[in-house]
Amino acid sequence: MNKSRALLILGIVFIATNLRGPISALGPVLEAIIEQFSLSPTQAGMLTTLPLLAFAMGSPLAAALAKRIGVELSLFLALLFIAVGLASRLIDSVAILFIGTAVIGVGIALGNVLLPSVIKRDFPSQLAVMTATYVLVMGIVSGGYSALILPISQYQNMGWQMALAGFAVVTLISIVLWLPQLRKHTPPPPDLPDSVGDSKVWHSRLAWQITTLLGFNSFFTYIMYAWMPSILIELGVQPEEAGVLHGVFQVAAAVAAIALIPILARLKDQRMISFSLAGLTALSSIGLLFIPQFAIFWSVALGFFSGCVFILGLSFISLRTDTTSQTTSLSGMAQCLGYLWAAAGPMIAGALHSAFDSWVPVLWLCVAASVTCAIAGLFCGRNMTINEHAARTAASKS
Image (cartoon, rainbow, N blue to C red; front, top):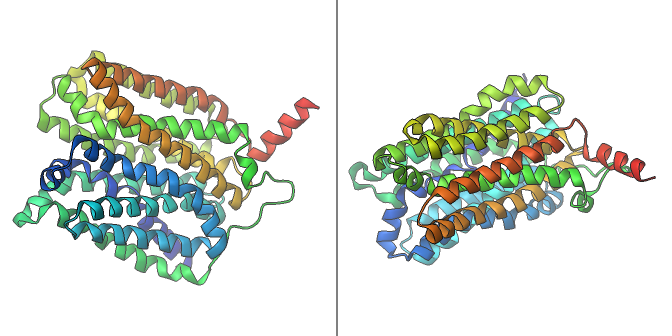
């Protein structure tokens, strides 16, 4: 492996470290934030939902930005947004707290959309391995930082602001490691004459199937991120243990990449594995509901199986597209709509809990979301690209 390729891989890995941790770390210190700024429940809910809305709003802009200034410079700007947002957390202002969180969300949205296109362009024969690798890094850093954020904030009375802003050190290292890539300024290459263009991706049935898989998986995942400790406590788990299991869920989702890498490398058709993994996620939700005494097992299972589905969905963005430009367009579409659904998840779950005074309906909602993923997986797991699917559809109509 030559030096430039090694630097590219290292740059991708470090960008991945920034794509979840700065947001997931909010949860464990949310009570301290509420206390310091006297936030209402509505404001606190908006603070946790705001990044997802920023993901959704920022995702469609990524393709246009990459075409104008290049993929490499766009990813550099994404890191700058995240760094600025993290630094803003040192300022004692509710308005700046919300603005900074939104800025971080936009930066993460750009990274989420553009990394798959870089992998599609530079690692066409290693799509599954590279996708699984960056998801693994993203999950481990996120779970680890979520677990450490409270001890860090309590160390020598450092406080939650310094603990959250401290992640900027990782972001600055990522910026330095990505600097060598700025010499390229590479825009996504134009689609081939017979390919499905950017706008037509939104009219592709296969693109919608991939979006459904990723969207409902994100819907499930962010319900768990927001409410899993509360669900576990209602089921009889001690609060301290519930916090640990919440971290276990995130780490298990990251470890899923290790198990899935060798399998994906051998499979051309992913229908059955997609259906099975999403189905097992649904069964694990049911298991948590009816056999809560095995909560640690169900927490690992939920994280692992849902993490596998997420990796599959991200892999499909590259595997089912024909050009880098098409990959960027599908990534923007899937992540825009996916994060809109994800943003709705915690709010719908909270409303259900308020209406029924129980988390049981929420767990059944999670089951329904996972079953929807399983059905979508039967379609988008087929070994064909968007162009091939469009050609078959046109042939069947003629």
